Image (tube, rainbow, N blue to C red; front, side):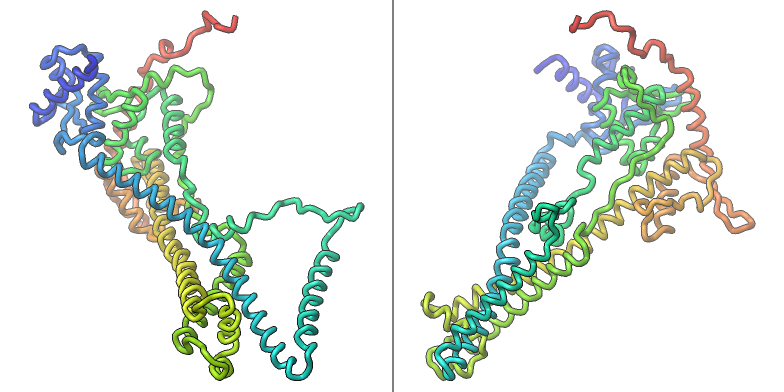
Length: 483
């Protein structure tokens, strides 16, 4: 075990004994560890064991652990949950891949098979009737069908747009592959916020760098859309990740300082608090006509599957010419075709042409329907998160006087369906930090005043003005390995 791990365990042991919490000074006096080591390790311990921060009357930060010392990363339950999520993810990806492969075979393959069986049944029925009138009836019908197909193909080729050399013109915009369009209809377009954590962290870091390496909890809430309790835990993790540390201003306000993030040669600035917003999920990017086409194909499969399953149960095995005559034409002709190559055509029709495509067609409808309602719920949650980011920002911008109408965002990504409930939730979440005073004007408008938040904003402004930036700038280059 290295020296840092030993120091880490020493601090944890002291914190376990001090049920009401401990300051940095308490830790130093109990462990004799250097102040720099304690300041470095305490945020990491608070992150791992879900610690909380308080400010004492003397202006010191008190670390306390109301939930005990169960690790968020190393406990058996956490490891088991992580393993279960990984297994679930693998099973889901494998199932989706196999189901996508099955879709391509079933949707298109069965559609073509059913159309072919229908045409073959028509051909057999007409040929049998024509055979009684003349021996060339079937041959004439066959030639007629071939000629019709040839004419359709020839006409389509003849009318395709061509260039000056007679070559078929290529379309400027290539068509989307059919399998991707089908998957879009069934599974949607995937997760639109895969890089959200990175995007959000970049915005927070850029804001910190433009504001003297300092951020407070309400500002962090505006970036994340989290309530104060979740944001406090999250910002401690952020401190561990980017070498930040909590400090207390002269007015007793906790701020989070990230000096190492200021050592940058970049020029990108984000002085204003502009939180990023999440994208909502799209059901499908296919055109209405494309999705309608898939619906028609699946409906055809559903009808044929239902038909063959019903007839296999109703008519059963055909064993003589009389049964062929009284059985429905499509079923009888399909039975006649299959009995030459399959021992039990009745079972084949009932299972392969009936039960399987019927089951598939039902699933093909159920998955998009279930996904529609599931994504609707997820999008509502995303809109609520975006609304909270927008509203927290509004409150922080003008904490002393903000009208309820100010919470009406223009972006549809930030508009929950129940606006009144969303506004009430925002007021309650921010009210944990600063209890608002509510006033109703003569015109009926509701005005909120977060005076404690205004005081905290003023303290933060004063603290930032006291930060000496001269020692935190990158100096001139004194050595270049390329020279």
